[in-house]
Length: 330
Image 1 (tube, helix red, strand yellow):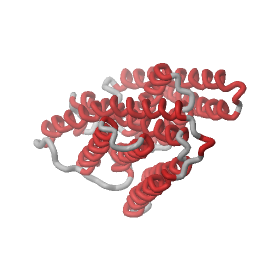
Image 2 (tube, rainbow, N blue to C red):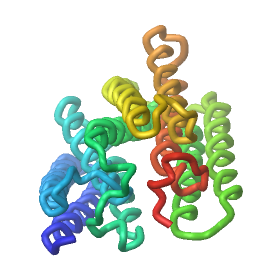
Image 3 (cartoon, rainbow, N blue to C red):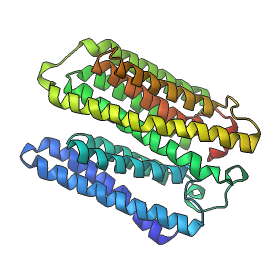
Image 4 (spheres, one colour):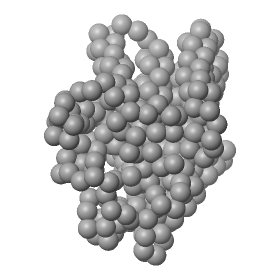
């Protein structure tokens, strides 16, 4: 990897960290909130531009579409998170989502920086990835994952602005435990069974406790106008991500038939992508038919974010195996 790519990628990562702390400070110093938010947005713009150039430079150096391993996918994911946040911030004048979006991008940069050095270097493609289908199938999936994460992040703010503080805390616990499982699966040799139990058990317990605690409302945190705004952002994010995931699944089937002679093999990662698709389809159905409250829909969005995390990173770090095992890095 060239020095230019390293410099640009580090600039994007540092910008996302700085933006995170600037957004946090904007909540602490109300007097300068608007100026600090603008500064935080500028930081994300700098990171987005730097990362865009870094990805293009990597593609030129590799002489191929730069999306072939976990490290490169993390760059694309962070790029999509920052880009879609900037788009929604412009459309909806968002003030609270920035710190969560920049934190997510910074986490992906940190996760990627700790991957083995072989992931960072530009290497020849493994035979399974030598196909024109790679640049057709993978980008829509990565962008859809980013959209589902953005929806889940918006759901956290929607719950907070609705006064459901306990539900926010239990949902956050589920996310933290899931991320911990992924991190341990990436950087340690802990038995996969325990890691899978941590991810699945932590997610289920956290989300069930969040659901049971929806009845507890803290009146002093309620801001119905902001809650409705982030409910809308949550919905719009899924409505963008859902067709992209659909395209990714369909093109994945076509690629699978080309490579393996079958459109669908019930591979663990294929199956989990289908579960994520069904979860988001359920959200859209419930939203359109108004069959549950906005707060319950927010919990569905957070649950879908966890399903996305399991689909994207879980199956390569938690030892589920399958035909997509070429994506493993150890």
